[in-house]
Image (cartoon, rainbow, N blue to C red; front, side, top):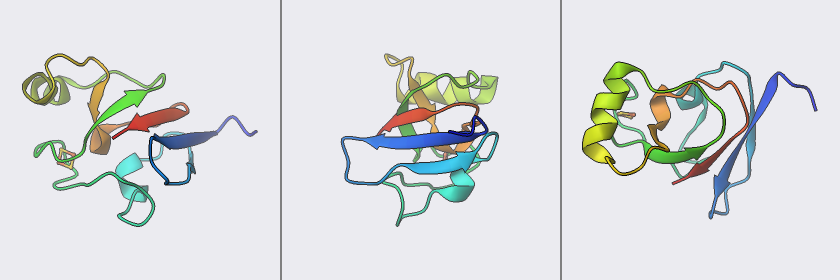
Length: 94
Ligand code: FES
């Protein structure tokens, strides 16, 4: 498969995997129809899009980290879906 395409899988759901170009903004492509993830602000403030991610993607920014420490202090795989920079295949555990 083309290495510039990233596969996004939604574990433990019936949603089909989706494929996006590397470095695309995940939040721009996930909708209520194609994913189980709900979004609110899409700017990393509200925490609605909290998910657990498996995959090799860049670490959270300082702003994202601050919110994650409040929302999911125990889970170092927790991320805000709207802030994810897609650099690799990922699995999302909602
Ligand atoms: S949608 Fe608000 S933090 Fe991601």
